[in-house]
Image 1: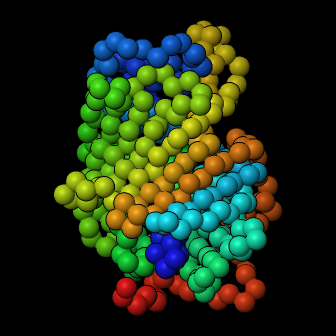
Image 2: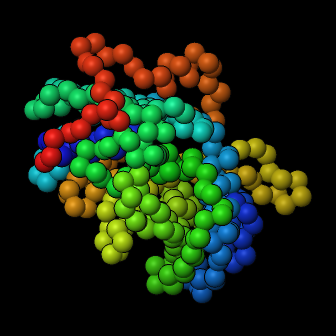
Length: 308
């Protein structure tokens, strides 16, 4: 359970040639899955797709979120809701049933936070500014090479810097594209990030972006975010020139895994509202760090967790 608590802290398109889902800019298709040659794609095209996706997904709220956390033989289920909006607003609040438990994970442009209350552990409430985290002053427990924006990336709401040294790879056997690049964690560890795409048109409920992977400098998988299913949302009427219907995909089932810790969070997301206009009051209520009676928040930039 201690590992479970520590890991929960961390949670806080240009036109392409050779793949119709990119060329048609998210156009709706229900054609049979192709079996022919997977044509090459460039890193610029894949980054462009991700950035167009993010630009079209301004806000995303789920009225029902089911979280199953698993660590070895232990698992428990929480239920609640999840909301996210550009550029860095995120909130997931879930509670357990008869077994108890509560999780409140959130982020806004200034900071991120996490509150966890589990049946067999003492409540924990921590927070940090994004600046302190990015500059290495806010230390996550166990120095896990991770970042609070991970969930936003899995939701498809992250803009990627086009100037980075990306590499695009085609995997014929799996019929996938892979976008990869090197990065450095705030603790100074070199890692490799990868995003796996379906190379073919992904009709619902198949996701177009299939998986996000983080590897260490030896290639060993550290953690993954796998999008198990997704749905399409129509953004407007068909284009009069091309008759293509503009859509954006949003996930409905995500599984986050940490390999070394043998821990995973399985998120089933229902009752979605896409690009809902949130009022100033809703933004404050959703994305301000909450006041939780009896809980004192700890600034991760000014606290050191004991060695495990």
